[in-house]
Length: 418
Image 1 (cartoon, rainbow, N blue to C red):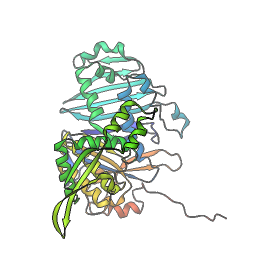
Image 2 (cartoon, helix red, strand yellow):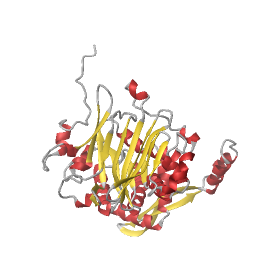
Image 3 (cartoon, rainbow, N blue to C red):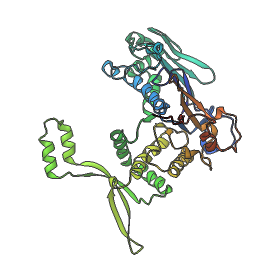
Image 4 (tube, one colour):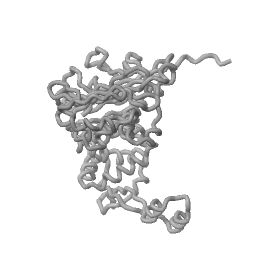
């Protein structure tokens, strides 16, 4: 479970920001909390004007993962260049910083690093806390100090660590037990979707794969019915392309042979089953390819299996623009259901849909984050509604639109263009 994520000098974020998942001192909304060593929030909505940096917050966690994943592969490293804050010359050559604090197997871990423009690791550290915090390792450039009592397995791997490699990634590669556990958690248990529409290949492929799991399919159908979708069944099956198209593909020398074989075998698609009526009486079932449904229905059918997987396996998911193609009432219901069924899973998402802040409220004040960009200097600031001392009965949406909390577009009065 995520406790905090901090970073600085990345895209529109110049100064250090802290995305804090700890619950504030607010009564009620018990379904919205994970009761752990500290009370944590199950979900957070991130709002802000266009260009405020909402997507960049999601990209920051993706970047953090990418550096960890690709740290041991020099070629892959080059695909992830330094993405510093560009509107201040001083920051072009400054280090970027990332740190995460999370709970794993009843222990609190803090892992962070600073990475230079050339990809070298300037600082890196890993702390573990049961009752008291203890250092597992600390790094200052190539000077790596190991805790010989609690991290002794990693002792002989210092010499294998290049200046542009993370020590955590190296020790995980060599199967140091604690490193491997943390590495796998950070890479596999944190799921990031930067764009549910533009990233269709990954989003849809995983969605189809998940629906082949009978448990996930069964739970996804329950979820969809709770959202008032009259879908009776979901099936993933292969659909053959016309013979003339297959022949053209087979004769296309630019395509890999493995891809040609997959296409020849048939392309996987999701089919939905609905009731077929005869004069208002259920006569049978009828099956449709999912792509014959609305964009919103398609998105939900792919999204719900992902959320079921997150709930089932206590994962953390970051989603950019969750509201795209979905009605406000549907979004609110999806979040409510997530918070009811989640035990230790977490959902963090960006949205433009301010109507999710309408009464009846589904969020606590500490579950609402805002992003605002400085109009002069261009750097993004992150803050929570909980930072504002307001009454519980205050109309959040009305006061947001009145500019009390910032995070809305500021449009100058129209000027005479003549």
